[in-house]
Length: 448
Image (cartoon, rainbow, N blue to C red; front, side):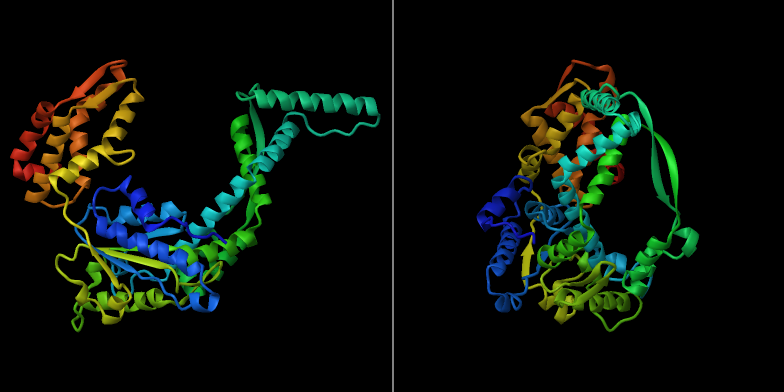
């Protein structure tokens, strides 16, 4: 079974620091939670079963790093991760979408992860088998009665195989037989897979998938495309589905992370009607999943006892204490994320790996245009982002994306005709391109 990283909390925070500026309290909280999962795996099974995750609630405005912290944390340990919005469970009235679907979706993500890893481990064998199938297309298999003819035939196959490896046939097309399933609508009308999963724990949708008619279709493909197609098919043959499912469920149960965003939107005071009833209903549905329950999926039963839940919300018009006491108790770790300052915006532009500046420079370098930013340009963009957030809607670091696009818009449009040119963005240029928009408050509210 996949095991958690043995990184220490200090090392986890250091890794998060490479991508996210500030918010040290939140980073420390998730680092401890992650390390505790590793610690639990070192315990005797009887004791480990009783050690439940310390779920986390992040409180802070949008765009300050809540989602990114959780996503980077999952990437760091290669854990199944899903982000859901609490509000989507109330969108269609009192019923909403089945809350258990978040666990089913998490299992599907885990299965894709495990299948990809196992397919990568089989890549060499799959490539060899795909090469044989390509040779069969270019020189179909034949039977030869005498040894001399068979030897000549095998020499021809070896020659073609060498030419394939050298790319001689890359521009050639071959005919490949593919098998296609009929559409689910043909058998189920307008009934969707989500409804089937909810009705039958996933078993019905799997049954319908097996019963769907298939047909053989012959398609023309380039040799490289056929090689990739054959490699995928061969990898699927080599990977044992049962072992993938078993490992994926175990990984979901032991290392899965569910990030529930906008949880403040379901923090109704209760006792009311209309939306309050819907919000309370979502909380009641969430409670058993967060507490630990068995969820039926088409791959089997999944227990949620040791899945780490991270909830987040701005809590402008509500507070954590407005939630059901039982649900509050399941998020014992509370961390507050701070608004971004001018200096934070400067650091966000400069410091993280693959920062916004580095991305923009790399994009234009693809057109052979060298772009650079002066220090005062970076500070000016940070100043504009901070001021617009303060005066209008505060969307945190997301504001920088819009500002960056405004600053480089003309150059991005004409870069294809500016090969081998060098361009330096200065603070004066940033001010010229943004000051009129910012001065017009009504316009900046929608443009920036």
